[in-house]
Image 1: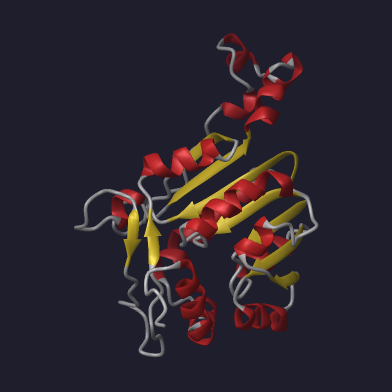
Image 2 (image 1 turned 90 degrees about the horizontal axis):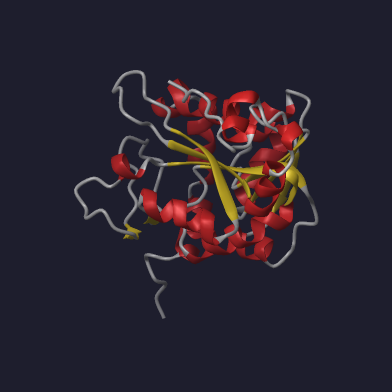
Length: 259
């Protein structure tokens, strides 16, 4: 029986085949958008929360884990691909573990952190939804879920603007890559609904702009568990003057998007 070419399982299989060229591409700075804007954008988003502990979910070869750990943050990097975790462990700079999103949803990780970050790591369908449902249990009080992903408007291309599986491509990468991973496209409305349905309140949406194209290079969502946000809103000492006048927690005030 053949494997469904558009599935969560196929994504993991493809990344397993491409662990070595991906590691080289990331560490050699071969990905233009990452080098110019999105790497710094996600680091700034995480640091804006002043975390002491971070879970880097879908950490790949571990660059973000190492970057944050260098700032004296305790970081755990997790990925479903053993070969990528092996590359991460060989470079050091963090606590790296192998676990699938399904295993995490089932409670495999016995940790609680200030920030859970997913950097271009949420490519699947049902596995991503399961991870979202499990995320609140992995966050400390006032902890944040931060996600950077492809901007739906830019990633849609010529396809209809609706949720669904898309075939992958390694266009622009070296010939060492093979068997591209499929990915599940979500509209902006669907991303927002996924946060809400999973018990989160979006605090901020950032749209990092590519310095060359002057178009969105990605979108970054920053959210907290909804009931914890509303608990903050009920405490006057956690409001700033302008926000209090409008009945909005200080944490709701926007920050400039990275550009």
